[in-house]
Amino acid sequence: MAHVSPTFTLGVEEEYLIVDAETLDLVAAPDALMDGCINHLGEKVSPEFLRCQVEVGTGVCVTVAEAREDLSHLRRTVKKVCNEFGLEPIAASTHPFAAWQKQKFTEKERYQELERDLAGVARRMLICGMHVHVGIDDDDLRVDLLNQFSYFVPHLLALSTSSPFWEGRQTGLHSYRLSVFDNLPRTGLPPVFSSFSEYNRSVQTIIDAEIVEDASKLWWDVRPSARFPTLESRICDVMPRISHTIALTALTQSIFRMLYELRRKNQRWRLYERFLIEENRWRAQRYGPTQGLIDFGIGQIVPFEEILDELIDLVTPHASELGCLAEVQSTRSILREGTSSQRQAEVYEKATENGADQDEALKEVVSSLVTEFSQGL
Image (cartoon, helix red, strand yellow):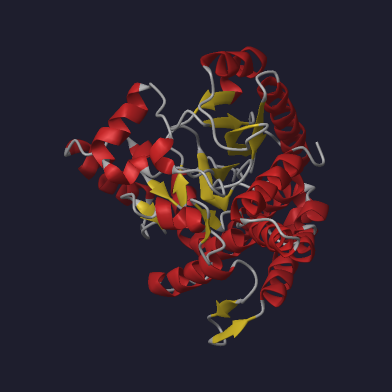
């Protein structure tokens, strides 16, 4: 039987927050807003857990360029519909000053079940993320690459961080989103499975026990999709600038292709102990790209710029084959421009230095997020 390589097709999902154009506080999206989005975008848009959120997802894209075109259209359309109601979308993983206690839940059976099952943990879920699906048709190959991809979760998180504020306070973390999300069950790094059969048996155990109805209730940082023949990277904060989203989409796709090509050569990425990867995950959550990650090979913390250069070198031939080398190389611009978490902190500090009080400075941060949502569309 002839060998068939994966398609490495792409799908990108983003979650947005909806704010009042004047007060910049979160608002519950009116039903007519969601109806308007659906009229324009069909199944590519859907409500989220909270009524102040909306989720979009591209179609199946062959290339990163196609994904960018699709996602740009989704962002433009959501913004246009929001503006008709005096509202604005922002792409950040937390709102700088909104209170989760004041948010309203979407009247949808799935979300009502989540609230019942997860209780107080679910009620704090005022967070948004960005997910990248990569098409890998073979079941056992998906699980093999799942195991190896976990190593790169901290790298992607560090580059995507956009949630330094929570309820009007600087948290000291670049991704406070994970502090909220990790309180849910079945989150974090995925377990290591020897085969797709072992993965299926494990999932079926909790399905049979009637704890979950299907694998969509597994919220790991990377997981086999419950609906598609894809691996889904879920670690990233959602990013205000679409150029950064596309850069990390390209890097994700290229990492998967690199790992696949290693397998074809009877090689593989080394599987490190989970607690070591979790240490890098914490460093990315706490510091973003500012303090470096542990290079397990030499046992030292290495500046993130060096880590990223090495990763780009590793995936360059694969990004070239996929037609997304320029986008992968543009991840360096994230370090130059700063991640959203860095830029938000800078806006806040500049506003306070210019005499703004805390509330005014936080509004300046949200205003900057509104502006960045449309950049490059």
